[in-house]
Image 1 (spheres, rainbow, N blue to C red):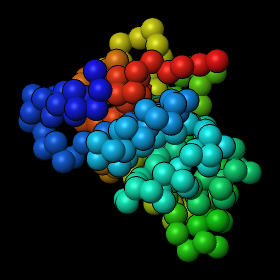
Image 2: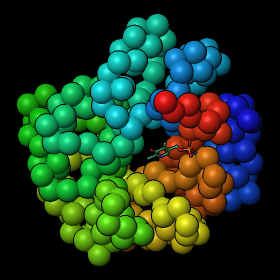
Image 3: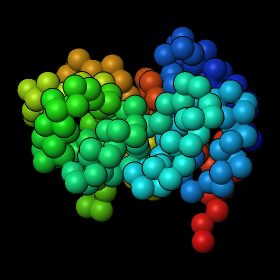
Amino acid sequence: MGLNDIRTRVETACKAANRDPAEVKLIAVSKVQPLERVEAVLEEGHRLFGENRVQEAAGKWPDFRERFEGVDVHLIGPLQSNKARQAMDLFDAIHSVDRPKLANAIARLAQEMGQCPDLFIQVNTGEEDQKAGVLPKEADAFIAECRGLDLPVAGLMCIPPVEETPSLHFALLAKIAARNGLTGLSMGMSADFEEAIALGATHVRVGSAIFGERVTT
Ligand SMILES: *Cc1c(COP(=O)(O)O)cnc(C)c1O
């Protein structure tokens, strides 16, 4: 595996689904990866990355941005309201907007800063207690609430339960997006990004299949 391999698989999945590959963004999830691996992928020309922790991203991306032109970094992990300002400074998109308190904090800061990253609303499609995200039945109301705050809602995001068929969750997310007139769909990871593309993903978040297994200590 590796970047080129995954790019090829993304293109193949797009063709199979009759989709334009330009519609599908490959987010290389660099969390916890050794800096050499991230740098190698930057050297290969890739420019879109995902991180799940604000602190960790703050430690590596300002540096990489100085050395490489045109880098985009997306936050794909949970965000505490008190870190919203730092997140809005660091990231080009936030995929984990999941509650009114956070939406309000972002809206206030967006007013003050005169800018806002693209936002994805995370939906807990599997209704898992331990997982972030609004419940599917609350999604329409929360999307409306975010729009009422003038937030730039680009789409929806989900992380399916590990033990279930991901396609059912991708289809549910796509359905909620469609009925709310949203086109962005952040779904699909190393094990299932092809299925996600078949069901309309516009942003696939692929970590280990690009960088290798995450080394945890
Ligand atoms: C870590 C992570 C990924 C990437 O997972 P892989 O299985 O390594 O591709 C995708 N999305 C989120 C939200 C993650 O935290």
